[in-house]
Length: 445
Image (cartoon, rainbow, N blue to C red; front, side, top):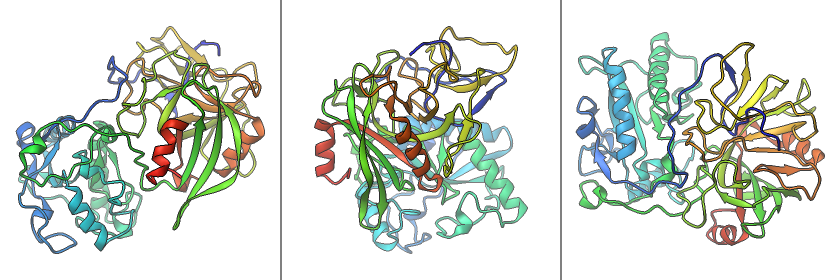
Protein backbone atom coordinates (compact mmCIF):
# COMPACT_ATOMS: atom_id res chain seq x y z
CA UNK A 1 0.00 0.00 0.00
CA UNK A 2 1.60 3.34 -0.97
CA UNK A 3 2.68 5.52 1.95
CA UNK A 4 1.94 9.02 0.71
CA UNK A 5 0.47 10.73 3.72
CA UNK A 6 -1.77 9.75 6.65
CA UNK A 7 -3.94 7.00 7.95
CA UNK A 8 -5.52 6.27 11.40
CA UNK A 9 -7.08 3.52 13.39
CA UNK A 10 -9.33 4.85 16.03
CA UNK A 11 -10.82 8.04 17.24
CA UNK A 12 -13.22 10.76 16.14
CA UNK A 13 -12.65 12.74 12.94
CA UNK A 14 -10.32 15.73 13.31
CA UNK A 15 -10.17 18.69 10.93
CA UNK A 16 -6.52 19.73 10.93
CA UNK A 17 -6.06 23.23 12.29
CA UNK A 18 -3.22 22.72 14.72
CA UNK A 19 -1.03 19.78 15.76
CA UNK A 20 -2.17 17.58 18.61
CA UNK A 21 0.25 16.52 21.33
CA UNK A 22 0.37 12.85 22.24
CA UNK A 23 2.44 10.86 24.67
CA UNK A 24 5.01 8.77 22.79
CA UNK A 25 6.69 5.75 24.35
CA UNK A 26 9.32 3.60 22.67
CA UNK A 27 8.13 0.12 23.63
CA UNK A 28 5.01 -1.40 22.05
CA UNK A 29 4.75 -4.24 24.55
CA UNK A 30 1.85 -4.01 26.98
CA UNK A 31 2.84 -2.80 30.43
CA UNK A 32 2.70 -5.13 33.39
CA UNK A 33 0.66 -4.33 36.45
CA UNK A 34 1.93 -1.79 38.96
CA UNK A 35 1.49 -1.51 42.73
CA UNK A 36 -1.51 0.31 44.14
CA UNK A 37 -0.78 3.51 46.02
CA UNK A 38 -2.79 5.83 48.24
CA UNK A 39 -4.07 8.77 46.19
CA UNK A 40 -3.33 11.19 49.03
CA UNK A 41 0.38 10.36 48.77
CA UNK A 42 0.50 11.92 45.31
CA UNK A 43 -2.42 14.36 45.58
CA UNK A 44 -3.05 15.30 49.23
CA UNK A 45 -5.62 17.90 48.17
CA UNK A 46 -8.07 15.24 46.95
CA UNK A 47 -10.81 14.57 49.50
CA UNK A 48 -11.45 10.90 50.29
CA UNK A 49 -15.00 9.85 51.21
CA UNK A 50 -15.18 6.14 50.34
CA UNK A 51 -18.88 5.36 50.52
CA UNK A 52 -18.43 1.58 50.73
CA UNK A 53 -16.50 2.11 53.97
CA UNK A 54 -19.80 3.46 55.39
CA UNK A 55 -23.46 2.41 55.18
CA UNK A 56 -24.07 5.43 52.86
CA UNK A 57 -24.26 3.42 49.64
CA UNK A 58 -26.97 1.58 47.73
CA UNK A 59 -26.41 -1.64 49.73
CA UNK A 60 -26.74 0.04 53.13
CA UNK A 61 -23.77 -2.09 54.26
CA UNK A 62 -20.17 -1.40 55.27
CA UNK A 63 -18.15 -3.30 52.65
CA UNK A 64 -14.64 -1.88 53.16
CA UNK A 65 -12.64 -1.83 56.43
CA UNK A 66 -10.90 1.48 55.59
CA UNK A 67 -11.70 4.92 54.18
CA UNK A 68 -8.82 4.77 51.72
CA UNK A 69 -8.48 5.37 47.98
CA UNK A 70 -5.96 3.04 46.34
CA UNK A 71 -5.19 3.20 42.61
CA UNK A 72 -2.56 1.73 40.32
CA UNK A 73 0.38 4.10 40.35
CA UNK A 74 -0.03 5.44 36.76
CA UNK A 75 -3.74 6.02 37.41
CA UNK A 76 -3.03 7.88 40.64
CA UNK A 77 -0.53 10.17 38.95
CA UNK A 78 -3.00 10.86 36.12
CA UNK A 79 -5.68 11.78 38.68
CA UNK A 80 -3.21 14.04 40.49
CA UNK A 81 -2.87 16.04 37.27
CA UNK A 82 -6.65 16.53 37.19
CA UNK A 83 -6.58 17.79 40.78
CA UNK A 84 -3.77 20.20 39.96
CA UNK A 85 -5.72 21.56 36.98
CA UNK A 86 -8.86 22.10 39.08
CA UNK A 87 -7.04 23.78 41.95
CA UNK A 88 -6.10 26.58 39.57
CA UNK A 89 -9.83 27.27 39.26
CA UNK A 90 -10.54 27.07 42.99
CA UNK A 91 -12.01 23.58 42.68
CA UNK A 92 -10.99 20.05 43.61
CA UNK A 93 -11.98 16.38 43.61
CA UNK A 94 -13.73 14.20 46.15
CA UNK A 95 -13.44 10.45 45.54
CA UNK A 96 -16.19 8.02 46.48
CA UNK A 97 -14.66 4.75 45.28
CA UNK A 98 -11.31 3.59 43.88
CA UNK A 99 -9.87 0.06 44.10
CA UNK A 100 -12.58 -2.50 44.88
CA UNK A 101 -11.82 -6.16 45.75
CA UNK A 102 -13.41 -8.73 43.43
CA UNK A 103 -15.20 -10.32 46.38
CA UNK A 104 -17.03 -7.03 46.97
CA UNK A 105 -17.87 -6.89 43.26
CA UNK A 106 -19.65 -10.23 43.62
CA UNK A 107 -21.75 -8.85 46.49
CA UNK A 108 -22.75 -5.79 44.45
CA UNK A 109 -23.68 -7.99 41.48
CA UNK A 110 -26.00 -10.10 43.60
CA UNK A 111 -27.91 -6.95 44.56
CA UNK A 112 -27.88 -5.22 41.14
CA UNK A 113 -27.15 -7.73 38.32
CA UNK A 114 -27.39 -5.00 35.68
CA UNK A 115 -24.26 -4.38 33.56
CA UNK A 116 -25.29 -0.80 32.91
CA UNK A 117 -24.40 -0.01 36.53
CA UNK A 118 -22.49 -2.96 38.04
CA UNK A 119 -19.87 -4.96 36.14
CA UNK A 120 -20.35 -8.73 36.01
CA UNK A 121 -17.72 -10.30 38.32
CA UNK A 122 -17.12 -12.99 35.67
CA UNK A 123 -15.20 -10.39 33.70
CA UNK A 124 -14.46 -8.06 36.61
CA UNK A 125 -14.86 -4.35 37.12
CA UNK A 126 -12.22 -1.79 36.25
CA UNK A 127 -12.41 -0.88 39.92
CA UNK A 128 -11.09 -4.40 40.64
CA UNK A 129 -7.93 -3.40 38.74
CA UNK A 130 -7.39 -0.14 40.62
CA UNK A 131 -7.96 1.64 37.32
CA UNK A 132 -11.33 3.35 37.87
CA UNK A 133 -12.52 6.09 40.16
CA UNK A 134 -15.93 7.40 41.24
CA UNK A 135 -15.82 11.07 42.16
CA UNK A 136 -17.34 14.53 42.15
CA UNK A 137 -16.28 18.18 42.31
CA UNK A 138 -15.88 20.30 45.43
CA UNK A 139 -15.29 24.02 45.88
CA UNK A 140 -12.38 25.63 47.68
CA UNK A 141 -14.13 25.08 51.03
CA UNK A 142 -14.62 21.38 50.31
CA UNK A 143 -18.36 21.61 49.61
CA UNK A 144 -19.74 19.32 46.92
CA UNK A 145 -21.00 21.06 43.80
CA UNK A 146 -24.54 20.42 42.58
CA UNK A 147 -24.60 17.35 40.32
CA UNK A 148 -27.38 15.45 38.49
CA UNK A 149 -27.85 12.79 41.20
CA UNK A 150 -26.42 11.35 44.35
CA UNK A 151 -23.68 8.70 44.13
CA UNK A 152 -24.92 5.27 42.99
CA UNK A 153 -28.35 6.46 41.89
CA UNK A 154 -29.08 3.94 39.15
CA UNK A 155 -31.56 5.94 37.10
CA UNK A 156 -31.57 7.70 33.73
CA UNK A 157 -30.83 10.96 35.53
CA UNK A 158 -27.32 9.61 36.17
CA UNK A 159 -26.64 9.01 32.46
CA UNK A 160 -24.14 11.36 30.83
CA UNK A 161 -26.48 12.30 28.02
CA UNK A 162 -29.49 13.06 30.24
CA UNK A 163 -30.43 16.70 29.76
CA UNK A 164 -33.61 17.33 31.77
CA UNK A 165 -31.65 18.75 34.71
CA UNK A 166 -31.08 22.13 36.37
CA UNK A 167 -28.61 24.31 34.46
CA UNK A 168 -26.19 24.30 37.40
CA UNK A 169 -26.05 20.49 37.48
CA UNK A 170 -25.45 20.35 33.73
CA UNK A 171 -22.61 22.89 33.98
CA UNK A 172 -20.94 21.06 36.85
CA UNK A 173 -21.25 17.66 35.16
CA UNK A 174 -19.67 19.11 32.02
CA UNK A 175 -16.88 20.72 34.07
CA UNK A 176 -16.04 17.40 35.74
CA UNK A 177 -16.10 15.49 32.47
CA UNK A 178 -13.90 18.05 30.72
CA UNK A 179 -11.36 18.00 33.55
CA UNK A 180 -11.14 14.19 33.51
CA UNK A 181 -11.12 13.64 29.75
CA UNK A 182 -8.48 16.31 29.23
CA UNK A 183 -6.10 14.06 31.16
CA UNK A 184 -7.15 10.92 29.29
CA UNK A 185 -9.87 9.40 31.48
CA UNK A 186 -13.05 8.08 29.85
CA UNK A 187 -16.48 8.22 31.43
CA UNK A 188 -19.05 5.45 31.81
CA UNK A 189 -22.17 6.44 29.80
CA UNK A 190 -24.61 5.45 32.57
CA UNK A 191 -22.80 7.00 35.56
CA UNK A 192 -21.69 10.63 35.53
CA UNK A 193 -19.34 9.98 38.48
CA UNK A 194 -17.42 6.98 37.01
CA UNK A 195 -14.17 7.36 35.03
CA UNK A 196 -11.68 4.78 33.71
CA UNK A 197 -7.98 5.12 33.01
CA UNK A 198 -7.27 4.58 29.27
CA UNK A 199 -4.81 1.76 30.15
CA UNK A 200 -7.22 -0.04 32.50
CA UNK A 201 -7.03 -3.35 30.61
CA UNK A 202 -3.28 -3.58 31.28
CA UNK A 203 -3.78 -4.01 35.04
CA UNK A 204 -4.67 -7.27 36.78
CA UNK A 205 -7.95 -7.98 38.53
CA UNK A 206 -7.26 -8.24 42.27
CA UNK A 207 -9.11 -9.39 45.36
CA UNK A 208 -6.93 -8.41 48.30
CA UNK A 209 -8.87 -6.49 50.97
CA UNK A 210 -8.12 -2.84 51.56
CA UNK A 211 -5.26 -2.62 54.03
CA UNK A 212 -3.49 -5.72 52.71
CA UNK A 213 0.27 -5.11 52.15
CA UNK A 214 0.01 -7.29 49.02
CA UNK A 215 -1.82 -4.47 47.27
CA UNK A 216 1.39 -2.49 47.21
CA UNK A 217 3.28 -5.16 45.24
CA UNK A 218 3.27 -6.04 41.55
CA UNK A 219 0.79 -8.57 40.18
CA UNK A 220 1.20 -9.90 36.62
CA UNK A 221 -1.85 -9.36 34.44
CA UNK A 222 -3.13 -12.29 32.38
CA UNK A 223 -4.58 -12.25 28.89
CA UNK A 224 -8.29 -11.38 29.01
CA UNK A 225 -11.06 -10.25 26.71
CA UNK A 226 -12.62 -7.44 28.78
CA UNK A 227 -15.54 -6.45 26.56
CA UNK A 228 -16.97 -3.01 27.29
CA UNK A 229 -20.15 -3.63 29.23
CA UNK A 230 -22.16 -1.61 26.70
CA UNK A 231 -20.95 -3.71 23.73
CA UNK A 232 -23.51 -6.09 22.19
CA UNK A 233 -22.03 -6.60 18.70
CA UNK A 234 -18.82 -8.50 17.98
CA UNK A 235 -16.81 -8.96 14.77
CA UNK A 236 -14.60 -12.04 15.32
CA UNK A 237 -11.68 -12.76 12.98
CA UNK A 238 -9.79 -16.03 13.51
CA UNK A 239 -6.73 -17.18 11.54
CA UNK A 240 -5.16 -20.69 11.47
CA UNK A 241 -1.71 -19.47 12.60
CA UNK A 242 0.08 -16.28 13.69
CA UNK A 243 1.71 -16.16 10.25
CA UNK A 244 -1.49 -16.78 8.25
CA UNK A 245 -2.58 -14.19 5.70
CA UNK A 246 -6.09 -15.62 5.37
CA UNK A 247 -8.72 -15.77 8.10
CA UNK A 248 -12.47 -16.09 8.69
CA UNK A 249 -14.82 -13.34 9.89
CA UNK A 250 -18.00 -14.09 11.85
CA UNK A 251 -20.47 -11.59 13.31
CA UNK A 252 -22.13 -12.05 16.73
CA UNK A 253 -24.84 -10.28 18.70
CA UNK A 254 -25.19 -10.46 22.47
CA UNK A 255 -28.53 -11.73 23.80
CA UNK A 256 -29.76 -12.73 27.22
CA UNK A 257 -28.39 -16.20 26.51
CA UNK A 258 -24.96 -14.94 25.47
CA UNK A 259 -23.35 -14.37 22.08
CA UNK A 260 -25.30 -15.59 19.04
CA UNK A 261 -23.83 -15.91 15.52
CA UNK A 262 -25.35 -13.62 12.88
CA UNK A 263 -25.49 -14.86 9.29
CA UNK A 264 -22.73 -16.83 7.63
CA UNK A 265 -18.99 -16.35 8.03
CA UNK A 266 -16.82 -15.02 5.19
CA UNK A 267 -13.15 -14.99 4.21
CA UNK A 268 -10.81 -12.06 4.89
CA UNK A 269 -7.14 -11.35 4.27
CA UNK A 270 -4.66 -10.08 6.85
CA UNK A 271 -1.20 -8.48 6.81
CA UNK A 272 1.52 -10.04 4.68
CA UNK A 273 3.26 -11.21 7.88
CA UNK A 274 0.13 -12.39 9.67
CA UNK A 275 -0.83 -11.24 13.16
CA UNK A 276 1.00 -9.65 16.10
CA UNK A 277 -0.39 -8.33 19.37
CA UNK A 278 -1.81 -4.84 18.96
CA UNK A 279 -2.53 -2.23 21.61
CA UNK A 280 -6.21 -2.68 22.35
CA UNK A 281 -8.59 -3.38 25.23
CA UNK A 282 -7.15 -6.82 26.02
CA UNK A 283 -4.64 -7.38 28.79
CA UNK A 284 -0.87 -7.42 28.31
CA UNK A 285 0.41 -9.35 25.30
CA UNK A 286 2.46 -12.12 26.84
CA UNK A 287 1.74 -14.87 24.29
CA UNK A 288 3.39 -13.41 21.20
CA UNK A 289 5.35 -10.51 19.75
CA UNK A 290 3.94 -6.98 19.71
CA UNK A 291 2.95 -5.11 16.56
CA UNK A 292 5.14 -2.23 15.42
CA UNK A 293 5.00 0.35 12.64
CA UNK A 294 5.50 -0.93 9.08
CA UNK A 295 5.82 -4.58 10.19
CA UNK A 296 3.04 -5.55 7.74
CA UNK A 297 1.09 -7.44 10.41
CA UNK A 298 -2.54 -7.05 11.39
CA UNK A 299 -3.17 -6.40 15.11
CA UNK A 300 -4.31 -9.26 17.33
CA UNK A 301 -6.51 -8.40 20.31
CA UNK A 302 -9.76 -6.66 21.23
CA UNK A 303 -10.52 -3.27 19.68
CA UNK A 304 -13.35 -0.79 19.38
CA UNK A 305 -14.59 -0.14 15.85
CA UNK A 306 -14.36 3.49 14.79
CA UNK A 307 -15.91 5.67 12.11
CA UNK A 308 -16.63 4.55 8.54
CA UNK A 309 -15.15 6.32 5.50
CA UNK A 310 -15.47 6.03 1.77
CA UNK A 311 -15.39 7.62 -1.66
CA UNK A 312 -19.17 8.07 -1.99
CA UNK A 313 -20.86 11.21 -0.61
CA UNK A 314 -23.20 9.02 1.47
CA UNK A 315 -22.91 5.61 3.17
CA UNK A 316 -24.61 2.54 1.67
CA UNK A 317 -28.40 2.55 1.90
CA UNK A 318 -29.50 1.26 5.30
CA UNK A 319 -26.20 2.08 7.04
CA UNK A 320 -26.64 3.89 10.37
CA UNK A 321 -22.95 3.85 11.32
CA UNK A 322 -21.18 7.27 11.47
CA UNK A 323 -19.75 7.95 8.03
CA UNK A 324 -17.32 10.47 6.55
CA UNK A 325 -16.71 10.83 2.79
CA UNK A 326 -13.06 11.41 1.93
CA UNK A 327 -11.43 13.49 -0.78
CA UNK A 328 -7.81 14.03 -1.80
CA UNK A 329 -7.21 16.25 1.27
CA UNK A 330 -7.93 13.47 3.80
CA UNK A 331 -4.95 11.60 5.25
CA UNK A 332 -3.82 9.20 7.95
CA UNK A 333 -0.39 9.93 9.45
CA UNK A 334 1.95 6.96 9.89
CA UNK A 335 5.18 8.81 10.71
CA UNK A 336 5.97 7.75 14.33
CA UNK A 337 7.81 11.02 14.99
CA UNK A 338 4.85 13.19 14.06
CA UNK A 339 2.67 14.76 16.72
CA UNK A 340 -0.27 13.65 14.54
CA UNK A 341 0.86 10.00 14.43
CA UNK A 342 -2.06 7.59 14.04
CA UNK A 343 -4.53 10.38 13.31
CA UNK A 344 -7.09 10.59 10.51
CA UNK A 345 -7.41 14.20 9.47
CA UNK A 346 -8.28 16.61 6.76
CA UNK A 347 -5.42 18.92 5.83
CA UNK A 348 -6.55 22.50 5.42
CA UNK A 349 -4.93 24.39 2.52
CA UNK A 350 -1.60 25.85 3.60
CA UNK A 351 -1.64 24.12 6.98
CA UNK A 352 1.78 23.01 8.28
CA UNK A 353 2.73 19.36 8.58
CA UNK A 354 5.45 17.71 10.68
CA UNK A 355 5.45 14.28 9.07
CA UNK A 356 7.49 12.59 6.38
CA UNK A 357 5.03 9.75 5.78
CA UNK A 358 1.26 9.50 5.58
CA UNK A 359 -1.36 7.81 3.46
CA UNK A 360 -3.93 9.53 1.31
CA UNK A 361 -7.39 8.13 1.98
CA UNK A 362 -8.83 8.94 -1.46
CA UNK A 363 -6.81 6.36 -3.36
CA UNK A 364 -6.68 5.82 -7.12
CA UNK A 365 -7.87 2.21 -6.68
CA UNK A 366 -10.92 0.58 -5.07
CA UNK A 367 -9.41 -0.52 -1.72
CA UNK A 368 -10.86 2.33 0.32
CA UNK A 369 -14.20 2.49 -1.49
CA UNK A 370 -15.59 1.68 1.96
CA UNK A 371 -13.52 1.26 5.12
CA UNK A 372 -13.82 1.20 8.90
CA UNK A 373 -11.26 2.59 11.32
CA UNK A 374 -10.00 0.11 13.96
CA UNK A 375 -9.10 1.77 17.26
CA UNK A 376 -5.66 0.16 17.62
CA UNK A 377 -2.95 2.05 19.58
CA UNK A 378 -5.59 4.58 20.58
CA UNK A 379 -6.39 6.82 22.46
CA UNK A 380 -3.10 6.49 24.36
CA UNK A 381 -0.93 6.58 21.23
CA UNK A 382 2.57 5.13 21.58
CA UNK A 383 5.34 5.82 19.12
CA UNK A 384 5.89 3.21 16.39
CA UNK A 385 3.30 0.79 17.81
CA UNK A 386 1.22 0.70 14.65
CA UNK A 387 -1.06 3.15 12.88
CA UNK A 388 -3.87 3.42 10.36
CA UNK A 389 -5.49 0.02 10.76
CA UNK A 390 -8.70 -0.47 8.79
CA UNK A 391 -11.30 -2.98 7.70
CA UNK A 392 -11.53 -2.37 3.94
CA UNK A 393 -12.19 -3.85 0.49
CA UNK A 394 -9.62 -6.39 -0.68
CA UNK A 395 -7.59 -6.18 -3.88
CA UNK A 396 -8.17 -9.87 -4.63
CA UNK A 397 -9.09 -12.87 -2.44
CA UNK A 398 -5.40 -13.84 -2.38
CA UNK A 399 -3.87 -10.39 -1.76
CA UNK A 400 -2.48 -9.77 1.75
CA UNK A 401 -2.50 -6.24 3.19
CA UNK A 402 0.07 -4.01 4.86
CA UNK A 403 -1.63 -4.57 8.24
CA UNK A 404 -5.35 -4.12 7.68
CA UNK A 405 -8.11 -6.72 7.37
CA UNK A 406 -9.71 -6.86 3.91
CA UNK A 407 -12.76 -8.50 2.36
CA UNK A 408 -15.00 -8.56 -0.70
CA UNK A 409 -16.81 -5.24 -1.31
CA UNK A 410 -20.27 -6.77 -0.93
CA UNK A 411 -19.25 -8.14 2.48
CA UNK A 412 -17.87 -4.75 3.50
CA UNK A 413 -21.22 -3.17 2.64
CA UNK A 414 -23.06 -5.91 4.57
CA UNK A 415 -20.90 -5.20 7.60
CA UNK A 416 -21.57 -1.46 7.40
CA UNK A 417 -25.31 -2.02 7.25
CA UNK A 418 -25.20 -4.37 10.24
CA UNK A 419 -23.21 -2.21 12.65
CA UNK A 420 -25.34 -0.35 15.19
CA UNK A 421 -24.12 2.74 17.10
CA UNK A 422 -26.25 1.68 20.09
CA UNK A 423 -24.48 -1.70 20.20
CA UNK A 424 -20.94 -0.29 20.58
CA UNK A 425 -19.40 -3.04 18.41
CA UNK A 426 -15.91 -4.42 18.95
CA UNK A 427 -13.43 -6.33 16.80
CA UNK A 428 -11.49 -9.38 18.03
CA UNK A 429 -8.66 -10.81 15.89
CA UNK A 430 -6.77 -13.90 17.08
CA UNK A 431 -4.99 -17.01 15.81
CA UNK A 432 -6.65 -20.36 16.57
CA UNK A 433 -4.11 -21.24 19.28
CA UNK A 434 -5.13 -18.21 21.34
CA UNK A 435 -8.82 -18.21 20.42
CA UNK A 436 -9.56 -21.83 21.41
CA UNK A 437 -8.61 -21.53 25.14
CA UNK A 438 -10.52 -18.24 25.45
CA UNK A 439 -13.58 -19.87 23.91
CA UNK A 440 -13.25 -22.85 26.25
CA UNK A 441 -13.28 -20.48 29.23
CA UNK A 442 -16.42 -18.80 27.95
CA UNK A 443 -14.62 -15.53 27.26
CA UNK A 444 -15.36 -15.66 23.52
CA UNK A 445 -18.19 -17.23 21.50
